[in-house]
Length: 414
Image 1 (spheres, rainbow, N blue to C red):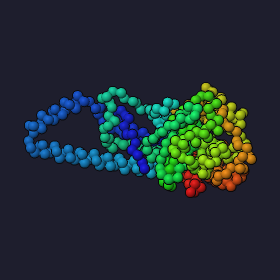
Image 2: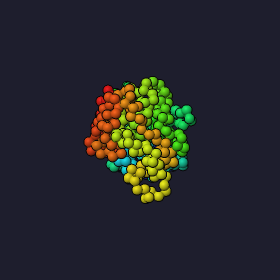
Image 3: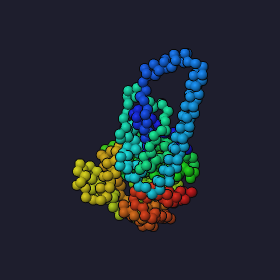
Image 4: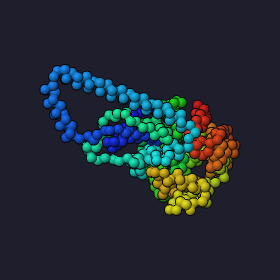
Protein backbone atom coordinates (compact mmCIF):
# COMPACT_ATOMS: atom_id res chain seq x y z
CA UNK A 1 0.00 0.00 0.00
CA UNK A 2 1.22 3.49 -0.85
CA UNK A 3 1.12 5.78 2.14
CA UNK A 4 0.69 9.49 1.77
CA UNK A 5 3.85 11.54 1.40
CA UNK A 6 4.73 14.52 3.54
CA UNK A 7 3.59 17.14 1.11
CA UNK A 8 4.73 20.54 2.15
CA UNK A 9 8.18 21.90 2.89
CA UNK A 10 8.41 24.88 0.63
CA UNK A 11 8.61 28.60 0.04
CA UNK A 12 5.48 30.52 -1.03
CA UNK A 13 6.44 30.27 -4.71
CA UNK A 14 7.97 26.79 -4.99
CA UNK A 15 6.60 23.74 -3.25
CA UNK A 16 8.33 20.40 -3.06
CA UNK A 17 6.89 16.96 -2.40
CA UNK A 18 9.84 15.02 -1.02
CA UNK A 19 10.18 11.29 -1.43
CA UNK A 20 13.03 8.82 -1.11
CA UNK A 21 14.19 9.18 -4.69
CA UNK A 22 12.24 11.98 -6.31
CA UNK A 23 10.16 15.07 -5.86
CA UNK A 24 7.45 17.11 -7.45
CA UNK A 25 7.89 20.83 -7.78
CA UNK A 26 4.87 23.07 -7.83
CA UNK A 27 5.25 26.50 -9.29
CA UNK A 28 2.44 29.00 -9.05
CA UNK A 29 1.35 32.31 -7.70
CA UNK A 30 0.77 31.28 -4.11
CA UNK A 31 0.71 34.25 -1.76
CA UNK A 32 2.26 34.22 1.66
CA UNK A 33 -0.16 33.56 4.46
CA UNK A 34 -0.65 36.86 6.28
CA UNK A 35 -3.03 36.51 9.27
CA UNK A 36 -3.52 40.29 9.55
CA UNK A 37 -4.39 40.58 5.87
CA UNK A 38 -6.79 37.64 6.07
CA UNK A 39 -8.52 39.21 9.08
CA UNK A 40 -8.96 42.52 7.23
CA UNK A 41 -10.32 40.76 4.16
CA UNK A 42 -12.73 38.69 6.25
CA UNK A 43 -14.02 41.81 7.99
CA UNK A 44 -14.37 43.63 4.67
CA UNK A 45 -16.21 40.68 3.13
CA UNK A 46 -18.57 40.47 6.10
CA UNK A 47 -19.35 44.18 5.84
CA UNK A 48 -19.94 44.01 2.10
CA UNK A 49 -22.14 40.94 2.40
CA UNK A 50 -24.58 42.79 4.70
CA UNK A 51 -25.12 45.51 2.11
CA UNK A 52 -25.16 43.23 -0.91
CA UNK A 53 -28.30 42.56 -2.93
CA UNK A 54 -29.73 39.03 -2.40
CA UNK A 55 -28.90 38.19 -6.01
CA UNK A 56 -25.29 39.19 -5.40
CA UNK A 57 -25.11 37.01 -2.31
CA UNK A 58 -26.44 34.05 -4.30
CA UNK A 59 -23.80 34.67 -6.97
CA UNK A 60 -21.10 34.64 -4.31
CA UNK A 61 -22.39 31.32 -2.94
CA UNK A 62 -22.44 29.75 -6.42
CA UNK A 63 -18.91 30.95 -7.03
CA UNK A 64 -17.81 29.42 -3.71
CA UNK A 65 -19.35 26.06 -4.57
CA UNK A 66 -17.70 26.11 -7.98
CA UNK A 67 -14.33 26.84 -6.38
CA UNK A 68 -14.73 23.98 -3.90
CA UNK A 69 -15.65 21.60 -6.71
CA UNK A 70 -12.60 22.73 -8.64
CA UNK A 71 -10.36 22.13 -5.63
CA UNK A 72 -11.76 18.61 -5.20
CA UNK A 73 -11.17 17.94 -8.89
CA UNK A 74 -7.58 19.19 -8.64
CA UNK A 75 -7.01 17.07 -5.54
CA UNK A 76 -8.27 13.97 -7.33
CA UNK A 77 -6.05 14.74 -10.30
CA UNK A 78 -3.08 15.13 -7.99
CA UNK A 79 -3.69 11.79 -6.30
CA UNK A 80 -4.09 10.13 -9.69
CA UNK A 81 -0.80 11.69 -10.76
CA UNK A 82 0.94 10.23 -7.70
CA UNK A 83 -0.36 6.78 -8.53
CA UNK A 84 0.76 7.07 -12.16
CA UNK A 85 4.19 8.24 -11.06
CA UNK A 86 4.53 5.28 -8.69
CA UNK A 87 3.68 2.87 -11.50
CA UNK A 88 6.10 4.70 -13.77
CA UNK A 89 8.85 4.33 -11.17
CA UNK A 90 8.39 0.59 -10.97
CA UNK A 91 8.63 0.32 -14.75
CA UNK A 92 11.60 2.65 -15.16
CA UNK A 93 13.54 1.29 -12.17
CA UNK A 94 14.29 -1.83 -14.16
CA UNK A 95 17.97 -1.88 -14.97
CA UNK A 96 18.82 1.57 -13.65
CA UNK A 97 21.92 1.95 -11.53
CA UNK A 98 21.77 3.24 -7.98
CA UNK A 99 23.49 6.43 -9.15
CA UNK A 100 20.81 6.99 -11.82
CA UNK A 101 18.00 6.34 -9.41
CA UNK A 102 19.10 8.37 -6.45
CA UNK A 103 21.72 10.92 -7.27
CA UNK A 104 21.39 12.22 -10.78
CA UNK A 105 22.93 15.68 -11.27
CA UNK A 106 20.95 18.33 -9.46
CA UNK A 107 19.01 15.79 -7.42
CA UNK A 108 21.37 15.30 -4.51
CA UNK A 109 19.72 14.55 -1.22
CA UNK A 110 16.73 12.80 -2.62
CA UNK A 111 17.29 9.37 -1.29
CA UNK A 112 15.81 10.27 1.48
CA UNK A 113 16.51 13.77 1.98
CA UNK A 114 19.54 11.76 3.08
CA UNK A 115 19.96 11.20 6.77
CA UNK A 116 22.31 12.94 9.15
CA UNK A 117 24.35 10.74 11.48
CA UNK A 118 21.97 11.65 14.28
CA UNK A 119 19.09 10.24 12.27
CA UNK A 120 17.53 13.63 11.58
CA UNK A 121 16.63 14.31 8.00
CA UNK A 122 18.70 16.71 5.98
CA UNK A 123 16.95 19.22 3.80
CA UNK A 124 17.06 18.42 0.12
CA UNK A 125 19.46 20.66 -1.76
CA UNK A 126 17.91 23.97 -2.66
CA UNK A 127 15.05 23.82 -0.19
CA UNK A 128 14.76 26.16 2.75
CA UNK A 129 13.30 25.49 6.20
CA UNK A 130 11.11 28.45 7.15
CA UNK A 131 10.80 29.36 10.80
CA UNK A 132 8.65 32.44 10.18
CA UNK A 133 5.03 31.48 11.02
CA UNK A 134 3.88 33.71 8.18
CA UNK A 135 5.70 31.44 5.75
CA UNK A 136 4.66 28.13 7.34
CA UNK A 137 1.93 27.02 4.95
CA UNK A 138 2.39 23.27 5.17
CA UNK A 139 -1.27 22.67 5.98
CA UNK A 140 -2.57 24.49 2.94
CA UNK A 141 -3.97 22.42 0.10
CA UNK A 142 -2.07 22.74 -3.17
CA UNK A 143 -3.22 23.76 -6.56
CA UNK A 144 -2.05 21.46 -9.34
CA UNK A 145 -1.64 24.43 -11.65
CA UNK A 146 1.89 24.67 -12.95
CA UNK A 147 2.88 21.14 -11.84
CA UNK A 148 6.37 20.27 -13.00
CA UNK A 149 7.67 16.70 -12.78
CA UNK A 150 11.42 16.21 -12.58
CA UNK A 151 11.66 13.77 -15.49
CA UNK A 152 15.29 12.79 -14.83
CA UNK A 153 14.40 11.30 -11.46
CA UNK A 154 12.85 7.91 -10.91
CA UNK A 155 10.06 8.50 -8.45
CA UNK A 156 9.63 6.06 -5.60
CA UNK A 157 6.39 4.75 -4.23
CA UNK A 158 5.89 7.92 -2.15
CA UNK A 159 5.74 5.94 1.07
CA UNK A 160 7.31 7.67 4.03
CA UNK A 161 10.16 5.95 5.77
CA UNK A 162 8.77 4.33 8.92
CA UNK A 163 12.01 3.91 10.80
CA UNK A 164 12.34 1.81 13.92
CA UNK A 165 15.46 1.44 16.03
CA UNK A 166 17.04 -1.27 18.15
CA UNK A 167 20.34 -1.10 20.02
CA UNK A 168 23.06 -3.70 19.48
CA UNK A 169 24.91 -5.18 22.42
CA UNK A 170 27.86 -2.81 21.88
CA UNK A 171 25.55 0.22 22.00
CA UNK A 172 25.32 0.96 18.26
CA UNK A 173 21.82 1.99 17.21
CA UNK A 174 20.41 0.03 14.26
CA UNK A 175 17.69 1.45 12.01
CA UNK A 176 15.19 -0.69 10.12
CA UNK A 177 11.69 -0.66 8.70
CA UNK A 178 9.01 -3.21 7.94
CA UNK A 179 6.49 -3.47 5.12
CA UNK A 180 4.07 -6.00 3.70
CA UNK A 181 2.59 -9.29 4.83
CA UNK A 182 3.77 -12.83 4.25
CA UNK A 183 7.04 -14.75 4.70
CA UNK A 184 9.70 -12.36 5.97
CA UNK A 185 12.73 -11.35 3.90
CA UNK A 186 15.51 -9.47 5.66
CA UNK A 187 17.30 -7.09 3.27
CA UNK A 188 20.98 -6.32 3.89
CA UNK A 189 22.44 -3.62 1.63
CA UNK A 190 25.90 -3.09 0.16
CA UNK A 191 28.85 -0.99 1.26
CA UNK A 192 28.32 2.79 1.36
CA UNK A 193 24.65 2.33 0.49
CA UNK A 194 21.52 2.18 2.67
CA UNK A 195 18.19 0.42 2.74
CA UNK A 196 16.62 3.33 0.86
CA UNK A 197 19.27 3.53 -1.83
CA UNK A 198 19.93 -0.18 -2.31
CA UNK A 199 16.42 -1.57 -2.02
CA UNK A 200 13.76 1.09 -1.98
CA UNK A 201 14.90 3.25 -4.88
CA UNK A 202 15.50 0.22 -7.10
CA UNK A 203 11.99 -1.20 -6.77
CA UNK A 204 12.60 -4.08 -4.35
CA UNK A 205 10.13 -2.92 -1.71
CA UNK A 206 7.20 -2.92 -4.11
CA UNK A 207 8.37 -5.98 -6.02
CA UNK A 208 8.76 -8.22 -2.98
CA UNK A 209 5.61 -7.10 -1.17
CA UNK A 210 3.58 -7.46 -4.38
CA UNK A 211 4.91 -11.03 -4.64
CA UNK A 212 3.42 -11.84 -1.23
CA UNK A 213 6.41 -11.34 1.06
CA UNK A 214 6.95 -9.05 3.99
CA UNK A 215 10.25 -7.21 4.22
CA UNK A 216 12.53 -6.08 7.01
CA UNK A 217 15.02 -3.62 5.53
CA UNK A 218 17.88 -2.58 7.80
CA UNK A 219 20.62 0.02 7.66
CA UNK A 220 23.93 -1.62 8.49
CA UNK A 221 26.02 0.11 11.15
CA UNK A 222 27.94 3.00 9.62
CA UNK A 223 25.22 3.50 7.00
CA UNK A 224 21.85 5.18 6.53
CA UNK A 225 20.13 6.06 9.78
CA UNK A 226 22.09 3.62 11.92
CA UNK A 227 24.89 4.62 14.29
CA UNK A 228 28.24 5.49 12.71
CA UNK A 229 31.22 4.79 14.98
CA UNK A 230 34.60 5.74 13.51
CA UNK A 231 36.50 2.86 15.13
CA UNK A 232 37.21 -0.14 12.88
CA UNK A 233 36.75 -2.46 15.86
CA UNK A 234 32.98 -2.02 15.48
CA UNK A 235 32.77 -3.32 11.92
CA UNK A 236 33.93 -6.93 11.46
CA UNK A 237 31.42 -9.03 9.54
CA UNK A 238 30.66 -11.41 12.42
CA UNK A 239 29.54 -8.41 14.46
CA UNK A 240 27.47 -7.12 11.53
CA UNK A 241 25.90 -10.57 11.11
CA UNK A 242 24.86 -10.38 14.75
CA UNK A 243 23.21 -7.05 13.91
CA UNK A 244 20.93 -8.92 11.51
CA UNK A 245 19.87 -11.23 14.32
CA UNK A 246 19.32 -8.25 16.64
CA UNK A 247 16.94 -6.71 14.09
CA UNK A 248 15.20 -10.07 13.56
CA UNK A 249 14.66 -10.41 17.30
CA UNK A 250 13.19 -6.92 17.43
CA UNK A 251 10.71 -8.08 14.77
CA UNK A 252 9.95 -11.36 16.61
CA UNK A 253 11.47 -13.43 13.80
CA UNK A 254 13.07 -16.71 14.83
CA UNK A 255 14.22 -17.27 11.25
CA UNK A 256 13.83 -15.55 7.88
CA UNK A 257 14.74 -15.48 4.23
CA UNK A 258 17.92 -13.42 3.86
CA UNK A 259 18.83 -11.26 0.85
CA UNK A 260 22.19 -9.49 0.75
CA UNK A 261 23.79 -7.34 -1.92
CA UNK A 262 27.58 -7.03 -2.22
CA UNK A 263 28.77 -6.41 1.36
CA UNK A 264 25.32 -7.56 2.45
CA UNK A 265 26.08 -10.86 0.73
CA UNK A 266 29.34 -11.18 2.67
CA UNK A 267 27.36 -10.63 5.88
CA UNK A 268 24.70 -13.12 4.78
CA UNK A 269 27.31 -15.83 4.26
CA UNK A 270 28.76 -15.16 7.72
CA UNK A 271 25.28 -15.34 9.22
CA UNK A 272 24.51 -18.64 7.51
CA UNK A 273 27.84 -20.14 8.62
CA UNK A 274 27.48 -19.11 12.26
CA UNK A 275 23.70 -19.23 12.82
CA UNK A 276 22.14 -21.54 10.21
CA UNK A 277 19.01 -22.00 12.33
CA UNK A 278 18.20 -18.32 11.68
CA UNK A 279 18.28 -18.65 7.87
CA UNK A 280 15.64 -20.38 5.77
CA UNK A 281 17.28 -19.55 2.47
CA UNK A 282 20.05 -17.14 1.48
CA UNK A 283 20.14 -15.12 -1.75
CA UNK A 284 23.27 -13.09 -2.44
CA UNK A 285 23.79 -10.74 -5.36
CA UNK A 286 26.80 -8.65 -6.32
CA UNK A 287 29.01 -11.40 -4.82
CA UNK A 288 30.86 -13.88 -7.01
CA UNK A 289 34.20 -15.39 -7.81
CA UNK A 290 36.20 -12.40 -6.52
CA UNK A 291 34.91 -13.24 -3.04
CA UNK A 292 37.06 -16.38 -3.15
CA UNK A 293 40.07 -14.34 -4.26
CA UNK A 294 39.84 -11.77 -1.45
CA UNK A 295 40.15 -9.10 -4.11
CA UNK A 296 38.36 -6.65 -1.83
CA UNK A 297 38.53 -8.26 1.61
CA UNK A 298 42.31 -8.89 1.66
CA UNK A 299 44.09 -6.53 4.10
CA UNK A 300 46.08 -4.80 1.36
CA UNK A 301 43.02 -4.24 -0.81
CA UNK A 302 41.03 -2.93 2.16
CA UNK A 303 43.79 -0.49 3.03
CA UNK A 304 43.89 0.93 -0.51
CA UNK A 305 40.13 1.45 -0.55
CA UNK A 306 40.01 2.94 2.96
CA UNK A 307 42.82 5.37 2.14
CA UNK A 308 40.93 6.42 -0.98
CA UNK A 309 37.91 7.22 1.16
CA UNK A 310 39.94 9.50 3.40
CA UNK A 311 42.34 11.30 1.09
CA UNK A 312 41.59 15.02 0.65
CA UNK A 313 42.86 14.87 -2.92
CA UNK A 314 40.45 12.72 -4.93
CA UNK A 315 42.46 13.29 -8.09
CA UNK A 316 45.32 11.32 -6.56
CA UNK A 317 43.25 8.12 -6.60
CA UNK A 318 44.39 5.92 -9.48
CA UNK A 319 42.75 2.57 -8.73
CA UNK A 320 39.44 2.35 -10.68
CA UNK A 321 37.67 0.41 -7.95
CA UNK A 322 38.88 2.88 -5.32
CA UNK A 323 37.56 5.75 -7.45
CA UNK A 324 34.16 4.05 -7.63
CA UNK A 325 33.98 3.55 -3.87
CA UNK A 326 35.07 7.14 -3.22
CA UNK A 327 32.45 8.55 -5.57
CA UNK A 328 29.79 6.52 -3.82
CA UNK A 329 30.99 7.58 -0.36
CA UNK A 330 31.01 11.25 -1.40
CA UNK A 331 27.26 11.29 -1.92
CA UNK A 332 25.39 13.62 0.44
CA UNK A 333 24.66 12.38 3.93
CA UNK A 334 27.35 9.69 4.05
CA UNK A 335 30.05 9.56 6.70
CA UNK A 336 33.39 8.79 5.04
CA UNK A 337 35.15 8.29 8.38
CA UNK A 338 32.66 5.60 9.35
CA UNK A 339 32.83 4.03 5.89
CA UNK A 340 36.64 3.97 5.97
CA UNK A 341 36.51 2.23 9.36
CA UNK A 342 34.01 -0.27 7.96
CA UNK A 343 36.25 -0.93 4.95
CA UNK A 344 39.35 -1.55 7.08
CA UNK A 345 37.46 -4.08 9.19
CA UNK A 346 36.03 -6.24 6.37
CA UNK A 347 36.50 -9.91 7.20
CA UNK A 348 38.22 -12.25 4.72
CA UNK A 349 36.16 -14.81 2.83
CA UNK A 350 34.96 -17.93 4.61
CA UNK A 351 37.26 -20.96 4.15
CA UNK A 352 36.28 -23.32 1.34
CA UNK A 353 35.55 -26.17 3.74
CA UNK A 354 33.10 -23.92 5.63
CA UNK A 355 31.37 -22.85 2.41
CA UNK A 356 31.06 -26.47 1.32
CA UNK A 357 29.22 -27.36 4.56
CA UNK A 358 26.59 -24.60 4.48
CA UNK A 359 23.26 -26.21 5.31
CA UNK A 360 20.68 -24.04 3.60
CA UNK A 361 19.71 -23.35 -0.04
CA UNK A 362 21.81 -20.54 -1.53
CA UNK A 363 21.31 -18.45 -4.68
CA UNK A 364 24.17 -16.43 -6.23
CA UNK A 365 23.19 -13.70 -8.73
CA UNK A 366 25.56 -11.41 -10.65
CA UNK A 367 25.52 -9.22 -13.74
CA UNK A 368 27.49 -10.47 -16.70
CA UNK A 369 29.48 -7.20 -16.76
CA UNK A 370 30.14 -7.08 -13.01
CA UNK A 371 33.91 -6.79 -12.73
CA UNK A 372 33.64 -6.14 -8.98
CA UNK A 373 31.90 -9.43 -8.11
CA UNK A 374 32.93 -11.56 -11.07
CA UNK A 375 30.99 -14.58 -12.29
CA UNK A 376 28.53 -16.31 -9.92
CA UNK A 377 29.32 -19.89 -10.98
CA UNK A 378 32.72 -20.34 -9.24
CA UNK A 379 31.24 -19.29 -5.89
CA UNK A 380 28.09 -21.38 -6.34
CA UNK A 381 30.19 -24.43 -7.20
CA UNK A 382 31.90 -24.50 -3.79
CA UNK A 383 28.60 -24.15 -1.87
CA UNK A 384 26.72 -27.43 -1.68
CA UNK A 385 23.51 -27.24 -3.69
CA UNK A 386 23.86 -23.53 -4.57
CA UNK A 387 22.40 -22.12 -7.76
CA UNK A 388 23.97 -19.46 -10.00
CA UNK A 389 22.13 -16.90 -12.14
CA UNK A 390 23.74 -14.39 -14.51
CA UNK A 391 21.90 -11.20 -15.50
CA UNK A 392 22.96 -10.29 -19.08
CA UNK A 393 24.43 -6.86 -19.74
CA UNK A 394 24.39 -5.68 -16.13
CA UNK A 395 27.27 -4.51 -13.93
CA UNK A 396 27.69 -4.09 -10.19
CA UNK A 397 25.54 -0.95 -10.07
CA UNK A 398 22.86 -1.87 -12.60
CA UNK A 399 22.16 -5.50 -11.70
CA UNK A 400 20.50 -4.50 -8.43
CA UNK A 401 17.70 -2.65 -10.24
CA UNK A 402 17.11 -5.22 -12.97
CA UNK A 403 13.72 -6.94 -12.95
CA UNK A 404 15.39 -10.25 -13.81
CA UNK A 405 17.44 -10.04 -10.61
CA UNK A 406 14.28 -9.49 -8.58
CA UNK A 407 12.44 -12.29 -10.36
CA UNK A 408 15.29 -14.74 -9.82
CA UNK A 409 15.23 -13.97 -6.09
CA UNK A 410 11.42 -14.18 -5.87
CA UNK A 411 11.37 -17.55 -7.67
CA UNK A 412 14.10 -18.86 -5.38
CA UNK A 413 12.33 -17.75 -2.20
CA UNK A 414 8.97 -19.25 -3.20
